[in-house]
Image (cartoon, rainbow, N blue to C red; front, top):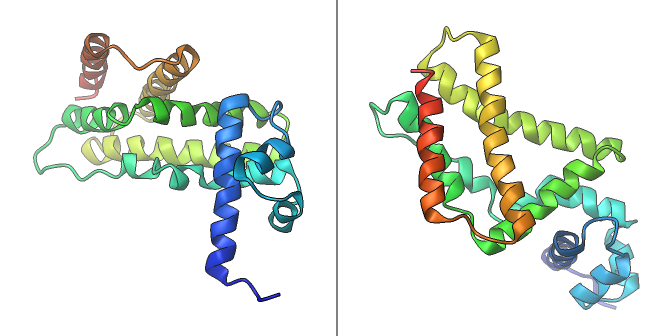
Length: 201
């Protein structure tokens, strides 16, 4: 049998992870079986165990790399025009996140909450999620500190935690209702978020 190229191995592994992402997003971690992933990927059972030892290992791999697979990581890469106020910077980030909310995107967002739920039972997953959460917090912290280097640390941490709770809470709501945000409602939410940001000016 000819030896598989490294590119082919990567392609097969990604196919398995994509199938798993679809199944976990649709059914959740506990209700998804290895057979479900095999059927979704249209591969043999022997092939899946060539790349992964267990369903948990697949889940952990997704926790590490799902943003790259769904282009989520690009959302928070911003360059701001010179002279932007802190509020303008923060609302630009807010808009960048909200503008990605399509039905497909929100479907995939379900798996992020699966990661958090299952992290209480899987210590390795808990560490992955804490690291990712800290990275997200640091993005907003950096924007604020660059604008206000002497900001009170307690206020900074409280604001950042509140900021991300608004994002995560809205995603949970729209995922659970399988719907996109109403544009008029989001205009009002954006106005409130902007007011919240102005507190730090």
